[in-house]
Length: 320
Image 1 (cartoon, rainbow, N blue to C red):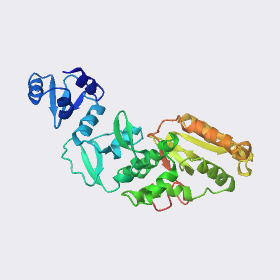
Image 2 (image 1 turned 45 degrees about the vertical axis):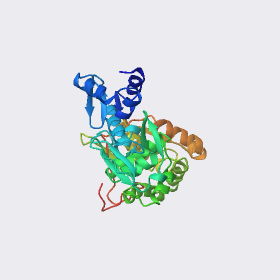
Image 3 (image 1 turned 90 degrees about the vertical axis):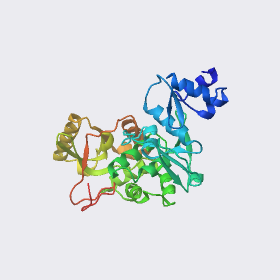
Image 4 (image 1 turned 30 degrees about the horizontal axis):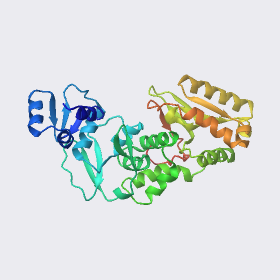
């Protein structure tokens, strides 16, 4: 195999196109001979170097090179490339292309879209995928609301998007907009007490995604802990010390018990004080330091209080 083609294939997980082979000096007869000698294997419209690892990224390269430019990975595939929770099962790669294109590809689920010209496309491991905002929008029809909420949280915490960017996309009325709007509706609701509302507004202005207010959490084993405010999807809660409703001895003992129980199920409790309330930058730093490095907790389920609506958009009578 010519050195130039070998180098190109190495950068594409062992995958290359007929056009790349012809440009390197190989003929179609050469390719047929290499396939017959089992140095290459033909996979749909591309070739794969024998012995190269059959990994998810190789399958994505096969799909991408088979469909050709312009295209971009979307949906669960783009979410997987971004490392978003809920996108672990790749399945059949998903690609979007401009509506004028009609690629014949059996290696991927290809969707023609009218909004291609306005879409942001980024490279990830050399592969084109939709930008984080467009990815979240294309995930909206595919993920349950809790998983979608976790994906939005992760993208915001990773500084890949801002909630206002998603709002701008929703104005275009793309598929899944209604479900995504339910997730973002949390930003339009406040917490119960004024100190809670104050902290909530600080986090919102800092670009944090919505959290949960006065909810408990249930472990996979059925244990119920709480209630707290916080980001249970990553196992972080926060409590307010120094507030009137937390000043009594009984309330302090109750808070201490909740914190102990939270620690037993590896939920970190950040204790906020009046100092944090007076210094918004400090408050944001403390919450960010707890939340950003925390992994997604698929073992925890949020349990809303029966008669109290939550800033996440849940209300009595809706699905949990």
